[in-house]
Length: 91
Image (cartoon, rainbow, N blue to C red; front, side, top):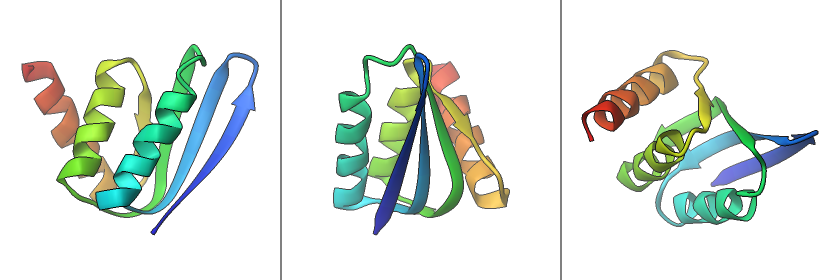
């Protein structure tokens, strides 16, 4: 399960995630992000993320390539963001 909380301020959007970015939940997160595409700045807080599968990493990677800021808080999310950043810089 994934919980997504949105906070809008001026022209920015912060998405706070809690739970697993996996499977159908990763697709729902992608839809949520696409709906918010009109915000000039998108920040994704991964503070309460417990798991990310390949689809979740794919969505986060696409967001990073399009300029979203991913904020990691713990060892798990920091490792995932670092992995995505490395893959993004190679692509």
